[in-house]
Amino acid sequence: MIAAWWRRFFFGPRDVRPLALMRIGVGVIVTWMLLERIAVARAALSDEGWLPSDAAEALMDPWHWSIFHTIDQPMAIAALLLVGGGCALLFTAGLFTRPAGVVAFVILASTHVRNPAVLYGADSVARIWLFYLLLMPCGRAWSIDAIRARIRGGGRAFREQPALMESWPVRLLQFQVALVYLATGVSKFYGADYHEGTALWFALANPTYSRFYLVAEPVLSSVAPVLAVLTLVTLWWELAFAFMMPFRLGRRVALSIGLFVHGGILVAMQIQFWGPLMLLSYLSFVSGRSIHRFWIRHLRETRDKRWSQRLVLRFDPGDGSAESLAARLQALDSFGLIRCVPEAGVETSWSLASGEAVPESEARGRVRGVLPLIGRLFF
Image 1 (cartoon, rainbow, N blue to C red):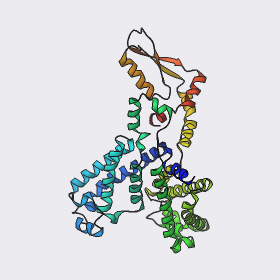
Image 2: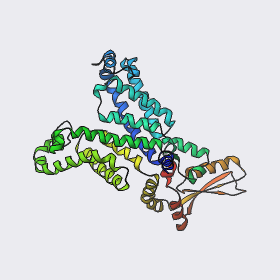
Image 3: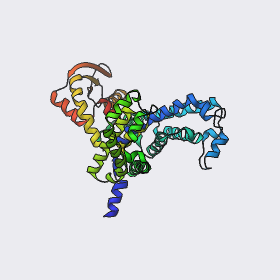
């Protein structure tokens, strides 16, 4: 029984779609991180800056290797960062997903090793999340690679079931998320600011982090007791996160508090990527079915209101090229905008006409049965 549970837990099938959404979010952030470093390539990553490569190598152990230990010219470094940003953008779009992601990961990790003095927590988290995504076939959904595969397969395989993967990379990512929260909670536990409930007050009053520090003093003083409670809640939530996740109710409570905490940080503080990266990791705990239902519920009404009619493609079934065109359109047109009708004896190999209304019952049936246009292109 235990062995069967273990196999299901680590190697059972899992929907790729939530991880594909995470790929898009992490890819956008990694792209930004790499491209913004071009502006500081000379100062922070080259031998002409304040940390020469010899000093950088002395800071790290021999196992930490960087491309920028051997490439030290500012223009070459900027070019390499541009390549890394381009590969991260390809990873985001899902074109040559894994090779592009590997190149982006190597260049991102190389910047971190070259100058660790300018890093903060989000840099490490971005690198770790990208590494885990490279272990997953996250390009099977919501990607250009998935669209190309769907066209090659005529769309049939993608209509039968969503793309699946083994669960073990997702489980590793989930453990890592729990470990991150546990580590941050333990580090805060030994500080007096969190036990006294003053950490959030000081953070919001600090012009380096706060978005509202100009009005912080009168406002924060009036809500100091509330901030003290929120500080303690944050501390104990981080400590308890890992122990709440195995239970369904505890998982929902932990993730809901996380949405509130990280959402508040995004609104009130100038900490650029930490919150979004942690929120993106929550997708590893979400089922593909939940995302499917959410997408259908919010876009079904749009489908019925805006596209009550669809185009009609009449094609000669004896013409191979026209039949191939119809198959490709059907593979892509999951929203039901085009009806492909085989009709022998048409004047041309194919013809496109407009104005055919979709019966109400059929329209609703198609919307329930398939994802809307953009959603099904990627899902």
